[in-house]
Image (tube, rainbow, N blue to C red):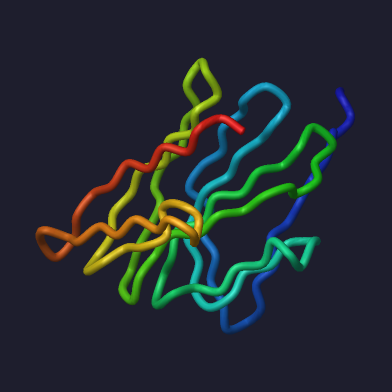
Length: 131
């Protein structure tokens, strides 16, 4: 039996809810995606995120040593949920899911992108270029 390389948790307290939707591997990076409400934390406080409303979308990356090295958030005032993640052969990361109302912050805060749902719920695909 091979020894476990690493194990990590994402912190949420009793008033918070976090749900994992998927994991993807690209080179030496491991990506996770899911949804959370309220606040979610990592071992590094700099990567912690505060939700923008109800449930929001999270993507986070671990390096080859299992250390959290980045996290990103997208969301709005309603429920926004990631349901799957994959990586293409060039290292681009794709996340899909659904959202209600408006969803913001698909890019960094200096150039945010806003999507508006066309119905009660709409689907999204979010591509994050390789680092």
